[in-house]
Picture (tube, helix red, strand yellow):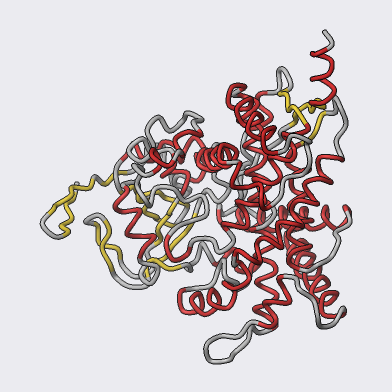
Amino acid sequence: MSSSARGAATTTFVHGKPPGAVPVLGHLPALARDPARFLGQVHRYGDLVEIRLGPHRLVAPCHPELVRQVYADDRTFDKGGPIYGRFREILGNGLATCAHADHRRQRRMLQPEFRPDRLAAHAAVMSREADALARSWHHGEVVDVFPACYRFTLRVVTRTLLGTEVPDALAERLQHAFETAFAGALRKLWMLPAGPGHRTAVRTLRRTVAELVHDHRAHGPGRTDLLAGLVAARDEDGSTLSDAELHDQVVAMLLAGTETTASQLSWTLRLLTAHPAELAAVQAEVDAVLPDARAAGWDDLPGLPRTARALTEALRLRPPGWVLLRTCTRETELGGRALPRGSQVLLSPYVAHHNPRIFPDPARFDPDRWLPERAAALPRWGFAGFANGPRQCLGADYARAEAAIALATVLARWQPVALPGRRGDDRPVRLTTVLRPQRLRLRVLDRARTGAAADGG
């Protein structure tokens, strides 16, 4: 137990360790076996909890004040270190992975591409692709939800980023390369062999991105997609993004703009099917805004607050970015514990989102906790669906718009129904950087057809 003084107030922080650490591996087996269960219980052991991952000792802040300190001070608690280095082989030094020294410059240069006027233009692409997704299903079909959502998000991000159509074969190649590359990086983190195909997947990913960028450049000037804006971006001193930086930004955006939103959509559909009253309430709102079951668009978003709340609550319960890592760039103190330079901090949205001191009744799916009057009472730093602080995801508004447009468009036309006896299909995938369903299959029923059948008796 330790105390930390801030002004006149003194807060006592409890330090602890989860049970079950084994020799050499520490808590790795428990984390790998069931990451959601392990992280969902971390808060029980203290305000600052030490977790052992093989030879690495990390501290996980659970108290809202300690979470705030880490998010707010990105100079002291920076990206980097031996664990984070595993993923730079794949993501390079783009905005998602770069250290503080590069982050400010890159963020300044990318920020204009995420202004509201640019997002409105991107939303037109989102609407068209959501319409194509909804039209691709058939009455009574059993849909494998995550792959379907992944193809949708990949087509959206590549068309807004590169202005190109994405054939299904290319989508599958990219998805397989991402999954294999990151699974190998995680296995190495767990001190296991990377597995067959890891190196090939990394090369495939980089080669595919290089081909997409080359194709973009070959079409010449005058383009209005996101990458064109990045190529033209200038910093305050007139400098531009290097070719390597452009490549790394594309890789990072392809990852951030595909698996994460596809996971959020998948979990939201699963949670809504498990809570019929919430599903009915969302569909009633969607029907009022889209009475002709057309695809939702940018101008419809203000009329879909309940839809947005359902998506946010799914993001709280199942945050795709479930683990964020930080490294101490200098000797510091956190919650009364001295942390030498190089100490690793496990900043987990999953831990915070399932902490009852931050979110009352955290296991409950309760979209109305995001009503303005209730959300105002929550700790500002508690929710990290898009990270938080200076490193909050630059594309958060892009992702929110994309998810809401897709969910509203799908629910306007389709009634998702859980398959009986398949409750275990939606367990999170193990050893993955994005917390997504292992397998989630839903039957989709045409609402126009089932509604007509009901009216006719």
